[in-house]
Length: 283
Length: 309
Image 1: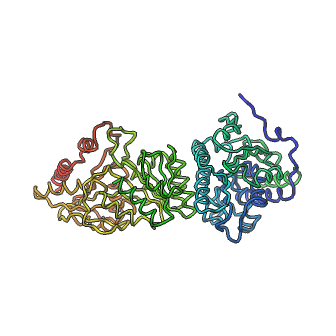
Image 2: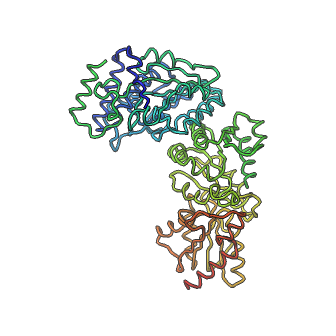
Image 3: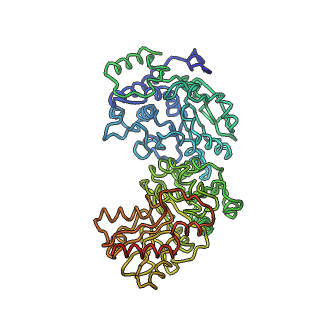
C-alpha cells in the first residue's frame, strides 16, 4: 500500500492562519453550531482557496451577483459549501447571521449549494463530477460572447474518481479553454479514508498534464502562494489546473487529517466550543 | 424525422443566435453547413454523454439554447444524473434529441433500444417529453420549441414514417391532436404508433367497431383534459412503442385514476412487456413480434372489448 504524505508533511512551513482565515473559519463553525451538522473537514481544507478567489482574484459584485462580466466560480465539490457560504457572507452576498440557519427548513443555505437560491452560487452541486463540464460550457459561452471573464471550478480529490471529470478534462483541453482554471482541493482524505488507499490518484499532476492542462501545485493554505498561481491563467493556450495541497479539517487541530470529521451530524455543544477554542489557539 | 429535426436546428440557429448544437460523435457530415457557417455554435464532442449534458447546462446558464443530439438510449440512461441535476434541477432550456426512440435500432440489439426513455425522462420535474409522429409534425414542433423555458426530451423515429398529421397547423406543447373520430373506443398514442393506431382503427371499422385516435405528441405535460374526455367512450386503448411500465399508458391511467374517471370497459394498455426485447431483425419485425402492428393491435382491442362487454 502506498502512503502518500499528508500536506502538512509536504509543506511543513505552511504560514500560520491569519485573522481573515480564522474569521472565515469561525463562520463555518457558526453554521455547524446552528445547523448541528456539516462537512467540517471538507470545508476547512477549502478556506484559503475560496478566500483568495473572492478576496483577491475574481471579479465579482455582491450587489449584482449575476453581473455579466463577473468571473464564474463553481464549487463542484458541493459538500464543501460551508466554505463557499462563509466566503460569500464575508462579501455581503447575504447576512453572516444566516450561517447559523444552515440546513434549517426555511433557510436558503442547504447542505449543498443551489443556484437561484443563494446569491453568488453559480451552480447547484452536490452530486460529484458535474462542475467541470458546466465550467467548460460557461467558458465556451464567454468565448462565443467575446467576454474575457474567467471560470474557476473547484473539485475535491475524492470527486475526481468520477469518470465524468475526465470527459470534461478532455473537452476543456480540446477547446483550449485558457480562461478555465480548475483547482483540486487535495486534502488526501475522502469519505472512507485516505485517497491513496480508496482509489489512488497519483501521479495526479502528470494525469492532468497528460490531459492537456497547464499544471502547478502549491500549498493550499498559503495565501500568497495561492495568489501567485491563481492571479492569472497559467497558459494562454491551455486550461489551468492548480493542485492545492490542503489539510482536511485545517485550523481545528483535533479534526485535522481525520476521516471521522469529513462530515459530522449531531455535534454536541462541548465539541463546538472545543472547535472555536482550537481555532483561536491554532496556527 | 431525424434529418428534419437537425435541419430545423440549423434553421433556428440562423434565426436566433442563442441556438447552439452539441453532438456526441455522430455520423460524418452531420450539420456540415452549420459547422462551416457558424463554427462557434457547432460542437461535435466525443463519446462523452455526461460531459455534453453538463457543457450544455453551462451554455444554457449563460443564455444559450443548446440542442444536444445523440442516440436516445445513451442520452437518457448514460447521463441520467446530469439530466436530472444539471438540466432539470436548474430548469434550463436544453433540448435533448434522442435518435432511434423505441426499437428503431432493432438490428443492433438490446443495448441500442430506447424502450424506457419516456418513463425515465417523464419522471423528472421540469422535463418536457415530446414524441412526434412524423417529419411534418417534427418541423412544426421544432419551430415552437425555441422559447419553451424548460428542458425538453425529443424522441425521434426512424425516418420515412408516414405523415399522419399532415393537415395540422402549428404545434402546441401539451396539446392532444385528434386524428380520427370514433364512438366506442378511443386509442391514445404517441410517436410513430399513431400511424399504426389509424390503420388499426380502419381494420376495426371494417368489423363494425368505431375507434377514434387521439395522438399525444406531448407525453409530458400530458393533455389531461383530452384524456379525461376520452374516458367518455366505452374503452380507452393506450398504444406505445415502449415498456408498458412507466410510459404513455402509465401516464394516461394516472390521470384517469386521479380524476376518478374510468371508461366503463376500462383501459387496455398495449406496449412492451417487462422484458428486454431479445431479438434482432427490423423495427417492423420486432413490432410484429410484440403485437404492435395494426392487425395485432386491432385484434387485441377486439378481443378485449368482447371480454369486457
